[in-house]
Image (cartoon, rainbow, N blue to C red; front, side, top):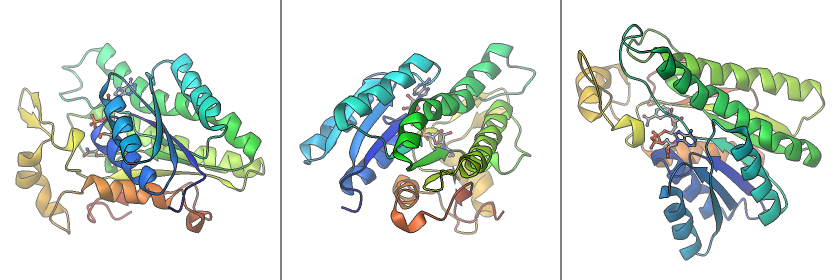
Amino acid sequence: MRLRDRVVVVTGGGGGIGRAIARAFAAEGAGLVLGDLGAAVTTVAANVRRDGGRAVTLEADVTRGADMAALAALADREFGRVDVLVTCAGLGDAGLLTEQDEREWLRVIDVNLNGTYRAIRAVLPQMMAQRSGRIVTIASVMGRIGGFGYVTAYVASKHGVIGLTRALAAELGAQGFTALTINALCPGYVRAGMGVAAQPTKTGPLGGEEIFERYFKRLVPQRRMIEVEEIAGAAVFLALPESAGITGQALNVDGGFVMS
Ligand SMILES: NC(=O)c1ccc[n+]([C@@H]2O[C@H](COP(=O)([O-])OP(=O)(O)OC[C@H]3O[C@@H](n4cnc5c(N)ncnc54)[C@H](O)[C@@H]3O)[C@@H](O)[C@H]2O)c1
């Protein structure tokens, strides 16, 4: 219960990783404001409340600035503050750049990169007024390395998320917001959500456990996929007092896949 008086906003809170992040923050006593498309997120919140936690939800699309403003307003109305933002909403693309039309490229960039920006933009004034806060962007190891085809928009968007994270960390520091940190988490191959959902391409499936076993496993020193609880644990760490000196970082949680 290390975050009992804290309020956490999570975008994509109904997804595989988002759900685990919600559960982990609830276990530390934090109040939750969960946004996502569709109804899955209401079940996540209902389970948190059943276990004695505090959670509210909003159907909130990260491609809409008004939805992000409504999510921040809900946090203010329900809890009177925002201490942590975790930007978990995301989607992938699959296929050759030349097979995809411009709409597909724009959609991935709009959700993963612009959506991260919109969520941050919505909660930042409250955090600045409090002169404290923690922002955790969920990027990917695909944002640390290039060299993976068939997911060009995804790779570009996640590089962008890390760039946004670093630049904003510098900007906040320069403005004197020394208790307001922003860091990126870079999951490797996670056993949930996108990590297990194989997507068809002209040359075969992309993603999924079989592809991990066949191609990626030997590149990962720990020879295993990452569990959602490991991503959630890292997100909680980045919200604790012990991590106050960490900002502008991109932390890989990937079994050693990427070592820079
Ligand atoms: N699973 C992995 O292996 C892996 C690896 C690296 C990074 N990630 C990142 O982790 C995050 C969560 O992914 P996941 O694996 O849990 O996948 P997921 O598909 O289970 O979760 C993604 C969530 O984002 C939501 N979402 C999509 N578009 C949205 C929009 N416009 N507005 C609001 N919500 C929207 C979805 O509804 C879903 O609940 C993503 O940013 C993803 O890029 C995942």
